[in-house]
Length: 173
Image (cartoon, rainbow, N blue to C red; front, side):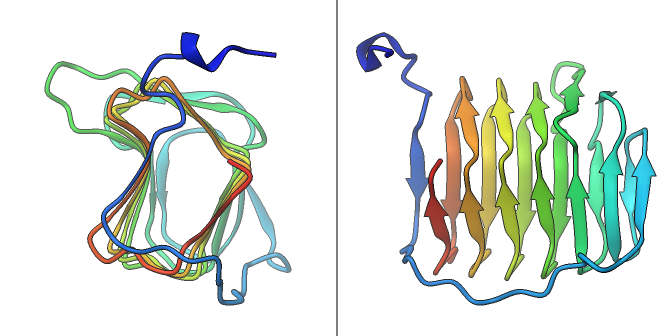
């Protein structure tokens, strides 16, 4: 068993700037869609299931989710930031999305490990977000499920829900 007094202060910190509750709305995810294997950083612009088949690295945003109804399963592979000084890169980014699911990802060394803006009815499951400035960052994003994630050694916050991020369910993290 670990002694919590010896953990860095950035471990297990949760910052919310609006209310959260334990209610969640049901979501439709792309479970019945064809699965596409991906092996490099890219913008994902069509609904469907995407599975990462190897570790990837990037000096910019690695994955940008550009459609609703996307499941990104990293299959426990790593997304690693290789950042030049001053680069505001994000491991996985989505804006104005609904019904996305980000699962089984190991995201490290970015400004934002995973960041979503104005995203609803989505899931963040079983991710390990380590050594970023912000681990999992939700901006104006509501009615999401954040479950069984690990946020370790993130410089500012492990989990950061800000600006009207309401009714998110946060459990077993």
